[in-house]
Image 1 (tube, rainbow, N blue to C red):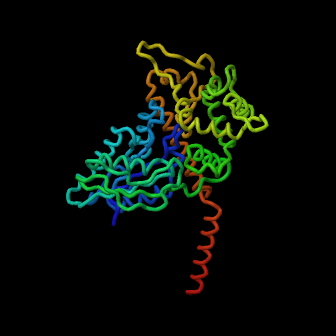
Image 2: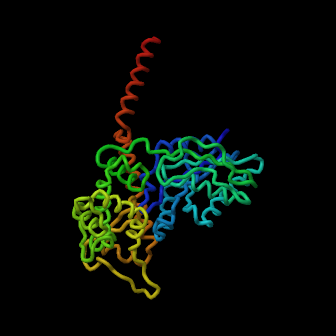
Image 3: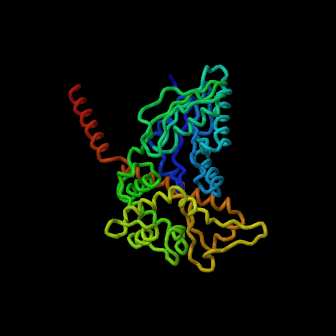
Length: 390
């Protein structure tokens, strides 16, 4: 059965989410080909030449309640400029308004094609982004009466193992959805870039924790939080009174373990347990708190000006994928039009990411050694076959 619509949750929105890191270039290429075969303009991805059947690409950013709200609108505008072929939606399974909005989008798409007997939706996304949970909520919204939980869910990645059977999510019009296992990136990359991507994905539980050392994750997290706020990082609330910012992981974990009473049998501080606590605290609340320091002008026209008394730039961020600095030259725009300021900074981050991806593709840095060997082997077989045919 042909799939007539594609619903793609891009990646988690846990505290510091990864909407850029999680872009699957292989899948994106397959989607562009799929859309062009069904009437979309290859030169203008926002225009459709022939509209015979539904063929949409909807990107849902789930768990919006764990994302700082001040960056949502600038992010949507920045992404719309750079990815005009996508429709973006923030959602959270326990916000009925979000589920209702998603249901209305699907219903409106189905009603544009009244001669189609049904609309089929394929849900694809990174592991542990809440695909199954979102579908359960969508089913409850679209079908009247009490609906049982149709798909099993888990807090850990990898619960869904196979493509699900069709799940009815709306009765009028008739809409079915397919749940799919989490799709990991084909290759994280080489060197420090690939290693950092893996750490980011592990921190948001997109990769199973057992594949990474928790102290290594804690070290990266400690560094990034200190960079964003070197004078008063949010993790100080976990430490004893009077503690100062630090990038020394052992010193930090020792203070944290001491305050939380994390002791081993001989009275030693359990550093590993402290690292686990730190990472999970960040996932549940710390990441959101770390990004809430964005300063907007008040209605009276007065506002705080942290770090603007010197020429040193101030570093800000909205999740791991969006980090920028601003100095005295940016002050007027930063406070007169804060949304526009953030949007322009986000656009610069997106451009930088896309340039990096294009550079990796040119240098074959986005292809694993195994894939390179396989490609060479296939080429050699083709050459031998050509000689034999002659």
